[in-house]
Length: 161
Image 1 (cartoon, helix red, strand yellow):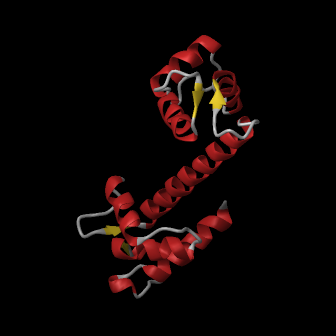
Image 2 (tube, helix red, strand yellow; image 1 turned 30 degrees about the vertical axis):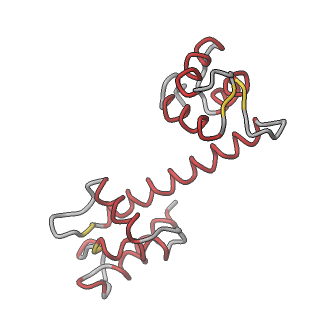
Image 3 (cartoon, rainbow, N blue to C red; image 1 turned 180 degrees about the horizontal axis):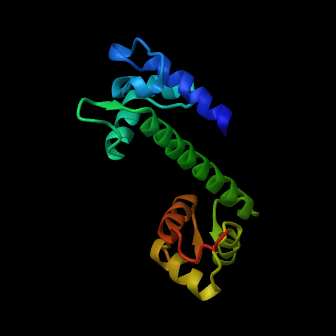
């Protein structure tokens, strides 16, 4: 973790400063939002300028002059990486549960998936959740419906760790 922060610090100081010419210390400079995507790409992320700016604006991470301090940069990076990893995890879970490789998972499969991520629910509770996203009422979900289901679940029933 500490090495990741140091890597972010090095990239931040490289892309920060007035007009992006860099700076010596993260406490004495800020990152222009226009340089956010470049800084994130330097850290190995695949993001374009528009997406990076939208992310910064949505998170209210910039000051009135359109710049980010180091703390805001680290927070945005963590949120971005966490979101990507969550999506990857969800895809892997769906593929694992889709044992017949039909692009569909059943209520029982979904109950297992919820248990894997720490959500304990009865089959009846899962069926209620599935009804919200199962438009064809077949008791099976496509990947897109599976994603929506997990957005709906949020932290409901998540066990303490």
